[in-house]
Amino acid sequence: MNATVHALLMRELKTRFGTNRLGYFWAVASPAAQASVMALIFTLLGRSSISGIPVALFLFTGILPFKFFMKLLPQVGAAVSANKALLTYRQVTAIDPIITRILIETVTFIVVYVLILGTMAWLDFEVLPNDLLALLAACFLLLILAVGIGLLFCCAVSYWPDTAKLFAMITTPMYLISGVLYSATMIPEQYWYLFSWNPIFHLIELSRDAFFVSYTTPIGDWYFVSFIALTSITLGLMAFRINRHRFIN
Image (cartoon, rainbow, N blue to C red):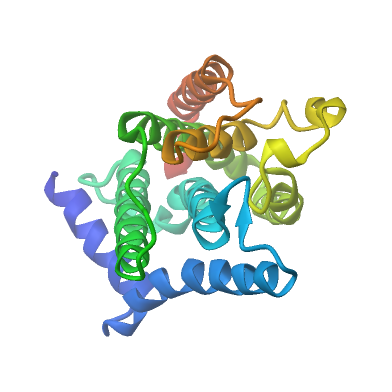
């Protein structure tokens, strides 16, 4: 890690989490509270499991990846505009704040994932993934997809600052159609085509398929999400390269 990224990293951490440890606590508490409330609602409705999986664990494996994607994408998209004043220094390049935010969000996601699963293991849940490599691959593709789309958003913001508002408008619909609270096996087969276009839905399905031995996704397609992720990162890097001079003007 070069000195510039390290300095930006310290600055971002202080800005985002504050100077006290309580700021870090909320990074864990937010997804845990969200999943816990939803698990309580499902339990009160008489559902102790979904697709043969304990409801709390089922929800965590959907909420955590989705929140990671939805947090990383706008962070990458706004990285340059939020640090534009720093780009006047020769040591700081446009890619540095993007790398910084990717590191923060990725490490936060890993730490939160491990802490929550560790807590659930302490509560006697079976939390060891059935296929760890496949789970890591799904998370990596999710990261690549978010960074690629985020770079495109970053370039769009340089032309139209209100792009961030557009992203806010699609957050809620995406939550409802990405399989966070349900699985493909709960959807009638004739309606699968309505969800099959959504790479986030595929990745959450593939994550659950990798995590749980009792669940096999009927929709999740590795080739499809790999193609979409690689296409998005390629287009994102190309657009960023073409527009790199706009970021310092």
